[in-house]
Length: 337
Image (cartoon, rainbow, N blue to C red):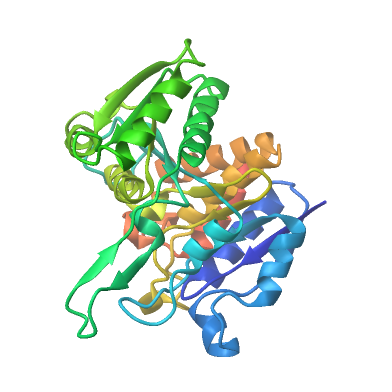
């Protein structure tokens, strides 16, 4: 039995985490889910969006599955997601994006995996006001070679493990010569250790254009934190949106798997939420704990439901069903496999 911390999160989080745990149970994986709190609900209940009890559980078990959390915009507490990545040095954010059958999307030939450095750069929110009137502000982008090497190495190792042919290093070193330049130089140095894998470097604005025009040319992509935040959502948009792509935050001795979409409070409690994103995140978790057969079984069942039982899917991807009908359809597809 595996002990894994489960953070249902806010809004639709409890509904989709219930769906995912039911599907994993039906696949035959014996997991002891240890409930924990985080996000807006935890803040309203305890005064802390990341209670000490939750941190203690992650400290102990070193692995968690997390539903969507609500972060106030422009005020209130800072992102719990950022805090978790920093505390546990989850330096690699893994975001696969793959075209799915019968899911509306602008293109039909995407199969890429994006690695995003997860702990540095502008995204960590190291910023301050420059005057008392709050009319001027600055943000500091810190990048070091060690962290850059770690996430880039993780990308190359992934490419080798899963027989991917190319790694694209995305940067803005033509303008940000110190920060982005450091990341690029670290990447080119790492690439020398992987002569069997093609390496290219590409400027981030060109990358955004090429992902829209020729997404099939990309395989494994690695970039800095803020660029990765933007490009990973672009990749999701190419395959149907954040509701159908999973995510993993990986460190040397800790891993947190999460849905990256919002908490959708407008449909919370209505049995309308699409659990695919969190389910695909859970499949990354199953791979992480070497339950690869179960991960493949669930993935194949999801593809079967999307292709041949679309009415059971939720409305956001063109179905007529509910969270419950989708869950039951995936479980039935596994039983018939």
